Image 1 (spheres, rainbow, N blue to C red):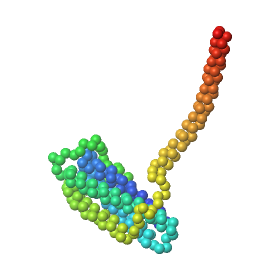
Image 2 (spheres, rainbow, N blue to C red):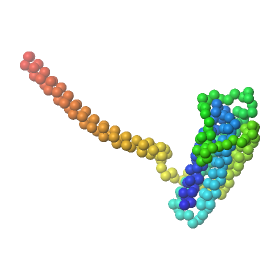
Image 3 (tube, one colour):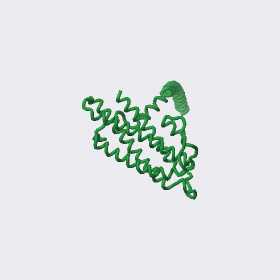
Image 4 (cartoon, rainbow, N blue to C red):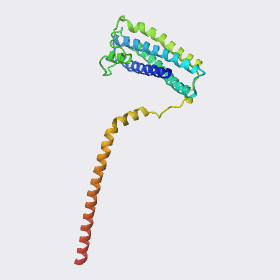
Length: 237
């Protein structure tokens, strides 16, 4: 039960973190706006809430001495994934801070990057955070105020990562992966193409059988013609 809860929290954190990265890349682009800055704020706050929940769950379990060896190995694997996800979130938060300083919304003369990307990002944020509609009640200077909050939140995430290392020491090189890198992608592709693959294999087999028969007939005909020509040459000579 606890293991499933940890996996569910980690899966939610991965989705929200990926959503946050997607939106960070649009800062300074043609789709940048006050709404985007508010979406970024809500998304990273949601990610931090999930990170705290993940930390509390995994820390409690990994400190429990009654956990079996197999379960502990699984929780350590989840801990490494969680730590990596938190590092990615911190990197993206720092990138958002740099881009926010570089492209402030309250400076109309500052041209944005024409990336070619357009459209809203509220749909992505809403799907990641399991909400239907995101409402924006931010002030006009959301980017100025939010950058100060973002700096504080980056420090908080850094402190969280430091405390995690002090409370639970799980070296990444001691945790073994359950499957090879990219196995999820390979399995998805193989499952999706299995039916097509079976049909194509059967078609190829039948096609190859027909090709072999035709090749045999042609080779036999050429051989007979060669023998006839050879006999004729011998008789004429």
